[in-house]
Image 1 (cartoon, rainbow, N blue to C red):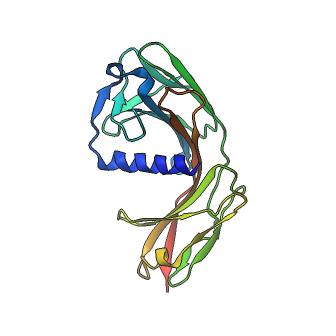
Image 2 (image 1 turned 60 degrees about the vertical axis):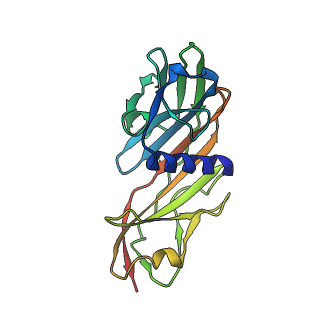
Image 3 (image 1 turned 90 degrees about the vertical axis):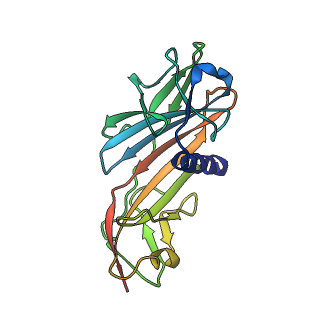
Length: 229
């Protein structure tokens, strides 16, 4: 599980840092197409994002744009390629908790992967501030952390690109500890933002020879936070 989590974040960082160079999927060995799928509900937009990405060889390989005789669908919905971001996407209204991705390569071979449901998670209504020089334990609203799940609270300095992540401690956890050193990155009186999310990253049941992974998640509502002394 930790392997897939590290792989997911490495691939995400690589996508941000690298220019989005692509290659046509029909020009590569179809058994060497690395596939990844994401199904995430964002409570802030009330949209479920179904996404798929294809790379050559591994999770950090060249991004592949599907050839005209290849396709990817989520349930009955075709996914559209997002230029500049290197993935295919379909936005669905409301929470779609489960569904099936189907990728058909240029040789007509299909791979089908059904993703399991995931439970909601939110920050408590009572959370409005963090105190400098103190760590803070945040109990979330929702079920305890399950096997294979990752829970993350993100503390964000408004109007900056500074993000500080705190993790649930493992199976059975119901709270996240936001450490003092994260909170102390914010001067007293700073307006900050925080949200919590849970997700599962796992291997695919059906994929080409080089493998792939899936991510299914729930992103809770963002909250305004005051930093005080």
